[in-house]
Length: 354
Ligand SMILES: Cc1ncc(COP(=O)(O)O)c(C=O)c1O
Image (cartoon, rainbow, N blue to C red; front, side, top):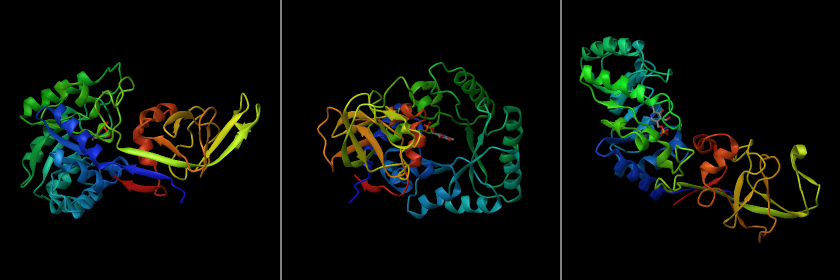
């Protein structure tokens, strides 16, 4: 057996959902499980967290269908809403709430009314999806006039809540709160970062994602400091242990040169498994629970790591991220975010649940 594994931990997911619930302080918690549960498995994430949360958040109707067909009856929010009339009918059949972010969606819904809970998305500064407040006022009135439609509230999304020097969140929150007061509607705005950092953003419903998966939204505060547990352990085995002479290079492109005589471990994982190809020299890994570093380029099926001073043999365990090396440490080394690392693990590693 090659032994390249992605261990997924339902008890850690449930624990982290409990942390979010405590922080929410009475606001409804909708756990974001889009994109295959941030790579953990859509129905696995739903099952693991359902007991701790009020509802689940997905991006697409297809994701909502999979969750419903799995037998989960919890409320579901579809964050990109419907794309056409068929999806309106599908949303009603699945009994899910939808986000409406554009006037064309309101027009489609008035042509094909359905008994649906709708959250109207306001653009408060993200400038991605959502209506400016002036347009939202008018569209809210139109939505309220559609038979069967229940205007459940206003939704917004923060652009910078995870940035230390955050220039936008306060203004974004003030905009959505002013409109919610005017229209007498509940608000959902907070992602993980805002849930943790801005109590005033919690309002009626929060939508945490990344914190549930054991990753910190903040570069300056670790997941363990936030009381979060790793929900994944990505690991592989050493398949060769080779001496290297001072001055010799390792791997494609000869991007790393040994500064002295040493030992190189070859590990059975590569970008074909979803380990990031752009991981640079020095990216942390742990061999038998001791931290060391990646050296040389990531190949499709293998990586090479430095074993100098470590006891290591063929077959030994190498953690790519998990308990000793946090996914956030790897993300920082790779110049990316844990979200992307989670989403990129391919089907090839064996999944081990528990
Ligand atoms: C609409 C919406 N709400 C909530 C979230 C959760 O954000 P995070 O994973 O940063 O907590 C996301 C994720 O990107 C999202 O798109």
